[in-house]
Amino acid sequence: MNEFIDLNMFVDEIITLEKRVLDHQNRDHLIAFYGSSSVRLWETLEEDLAPLNTINLGFGGSSFSWCIYYFNRVFKNIQPDEIVIYVGDNDLGSGHQPSKVLKKFVNLTNMIRLSFPKVKIHFITIKPSPIRTHLLPITLETNRLIRKEMLKMEKASMINVFDSMLDDKGVARPELYQEDQLHLNAKGYKIWKGVVRRHFGI
Image (cartoon, rainbow, N blue to C red; front, side, top):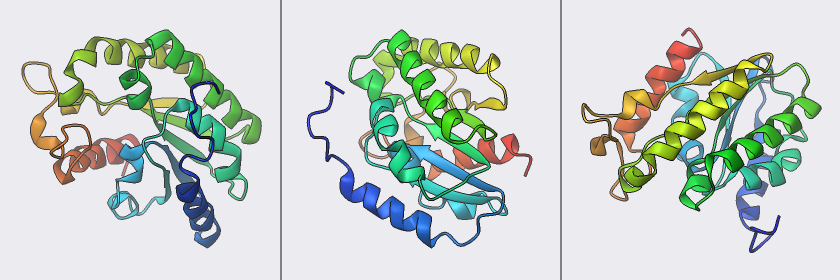
């Protein structure tokens, strides 16, 4: 918790997510997407992944610690069958090493299991970004560590968007990103759409 500067950070977005949960009428076979801005900015998620019943619960530029901090609040009125996590970009961007990110991943998934013992957990690989090309080695290592951890877990799988976002030189394709070269544009989300749809067999 000592990494937090303002414990009310993102609170307005969390209030919005709480309302979104309450307003989501279809609770059958619900798949909740939870994590940072790459989830939040996927504005066409529900449409892109139809006929799956999905809900977008991404917020801000969150980290694993923020996802842990707000988890109980966001999920208190929801009972998903599956949870898809995307987070870790900002942890690595803040200087955290892969081993620390792995510990936070384990903490979050343990929290999920305590609340929802039967839920299936999916983790979208931490994406490459042109502005963070210098972080590619530790991004790869973090994804590797998380994949290894998930192999020991029941009802858990990894969704690999990482490889599809690289060019023939092994770096992030700039045409998939907004001007900041960090957040995805429509072309980037088209890649995610295809990978996630294949993962769920639709």
